[in-house]
Length: 171
Image (tube, helix red, strand yellow):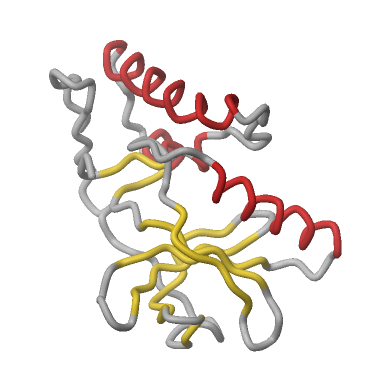
């Protein structure tokens, strides 16, 4: 269920069963990556796997994206993504860059703010549909999100529903 936008343009999304974090068997689960413990895999893509995790001292939830390709070009693109994430101005519609590093095996990772929600792709695949006003509110938020990137003279390069997170909260 998707509500109409509130005064600030936010919509509430409620889909039974989609609040669950998917956990899989994975060699990184339970390991420390720098100051962060990997809790479970939550997403996969062509370049990386995204894990839920937490900062060991503060307990703060994070998302950890780990490169899953050994190809030198993929590694180069991943490090470029790190530089871009560091340069993007803070924006409430853009996931927050926190940290980066390499595993003991030399595999790079990015630590990002954890977004409690689902992807737009998952929402649409569930059969739910956005009202016209909710879709317009989402598009305005996406425009705000990409504005910082465009001010840097950059484009996203992989805009698709599975790369757009819808947050359960407005934080």
